Amino acid sequence: MDFNAAIFDLDGTILDSMDVWEHIDIQFLKKRNLPVPDNYVTEICARSFEEAAQYTIDLFGLQETVEGIIEEWNNMAVEEYRNHVGLLPYALDYLLRLKEHGIKLAVATGLPENLYIPCLKNNSILELFDALCSTDEVQRGKEYSDVFELAARKLGVAPEHCIVFDDVLPAIKSAKAARMLAGGIYDKYSADQRTEIERIADIYLLDFRQAPIPHKEV
Image (cartoon, rainbow, N blue to C red; front, side):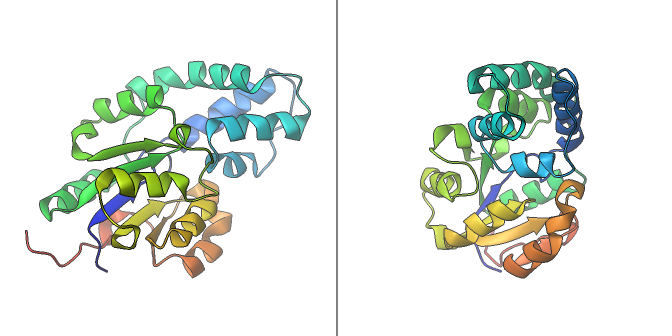
């Protein structure tokens, strides 16, 4: 596989954070005496915060505002992301190997800046990235290719020379729609999507040990 830039999702791809969101989701719904549907985490993880909040309101018929729900989620998550969320195994090694080979790196996340910046700093990887992008900066979540196209523009690399690594099916579909290579990453919360991700993605990885390195001069 040949590419000049690698665009990374965070939750469930680089960051070992999905359990944090499961806990937040459970606590958020428990406060309202609501059950947690089996597919709830999977359904919201590819969406922007605004889309996830609206989905939650519509799903449960809540008489709450999108802004209020986002504020509550942020308040519940900020301490975890600032101090406790770590990297998934082998992610750092792969990022460093790509940098050694002159590959540009970008983040394309559904997280807001106040969560992902402190987390990347705490894990000492913020400076590895040449561009940082969030769905907060575009009109739509990862069901569409907007955030990946934004990352390519910030990097100054044509989409067809980029690879996207993500753990959820909508993002993999969007990466392919943007004419990018797509690398699917296993995550237990999207395990039910694995067959379809493997069918669509250019490569599927259980972790980054077997992730591709382009054949380029260092």
